[in-house]
Length: 372
Image 1 (cartoon, rainbow, N blue to C red):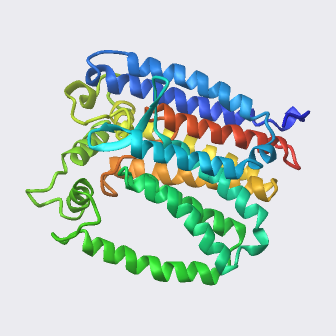
Image 2: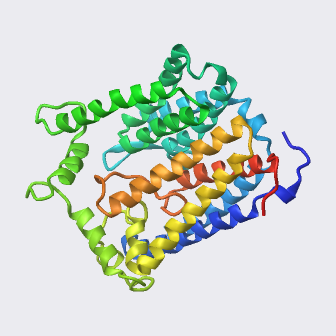
Image 3: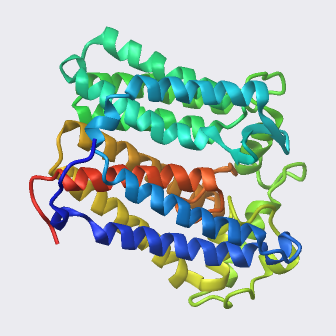
C-alpha cells in the first residue's frame, strides 16, 4: 500500500496547474454568486473549503500504490452501482432531476464519482485481460458492465454524464490496442444510430427522450423558431463577446449583475470568465487545461499498462467535459449541464477530479524516467 518513493519523480508542477485552475474557479464562482445567491458568500466558502479537503485527499492518494487500489476494482464497481441505485430510491429532486443523495448532511452526486470509479475499474479489468481485448465475448461482457451504470445515470436523467462513460470505454479500448476492424464496425453502427436519433427526437410521437432534452435539441437545430428556448445560449454568447480582449473586470459582468443565466457558477462558468476576463482569461483557462492534459499523457508515456489506461480514462473525462461545457457556452452544441473540470462549482465533481489527480501523481512516482 505505502512504500518508499523517489520523490524526485513527484510531479509538483501538475499540482501547481491544478491549484491554479481551482483558484480561477473559486474567483469565478465568487463573482457568479454575488447576486444569484442573494449576496451570500456561502457557495464560495463551501468551494474553498472543499478544495482544501479534496487537496488533502489528493495528496494522501498520491502516496497509495495505484496497483493496490486496483486490487479492489470489483468492490469499486459494486460500490458505484450501489450509489447509483441509492439515487434512484433515496435521491433528492432538484429542478426535475434526481441526481443527489444526502449522506450525513452532505449532498453527494454519485454520477460524478461514477466517472472516476469506472476509469479505475475498467483500467484494471482491461489490463488483467489485455490478451482478450479482441475477443468478441470479452468485449460484450465489457459493454454490459458499462451499460449498467450508464443506464442508471441516464434515467436520473443525465444524458451528458452517461455519454462520458461511453467515451471512457471507447478511449480505453483504443489505448488497449483493440483491432481497427472493431473501430470501423462501431462507427458503421454508431453513425446511423446518431442520424436516426437526431431524426427521431424531432418526431412528436417519440417517447425515449425527456421533454427538456427535446427542447434543447430543437432549440439548437431550429433557433429561429419562436417556440424554442435559446435565451440561455444567446445570453452566454453575448456575455463572452462583450468581454472582448481583456474583459470588464471582476464583479463587473452583466450575467451576475442582472441574473441573465441560471446557475452560472456551474454550467456557464466559462461565460462568467469570458465576460469578466475576456478572451485572455478564457485562453488562460484552456491553456492550463491543455497543459494538464499534456502532463498527464507525458506521465502515461513511461507507465505500465494499468497506469496508461487510468491516465487515458481520466484525460478522456477532462477532454469530453471541457469540450461540452465550452461548446454549450459558445453555442457549438445543444445546451446540456456538465461542469468545467476543476473550475465549475460542485464538490462531487471536484472530489472526483482530485481523486483522479491523486492516482496519477502516484503513477508518476512509478515512472521509469524522471522528468523536470
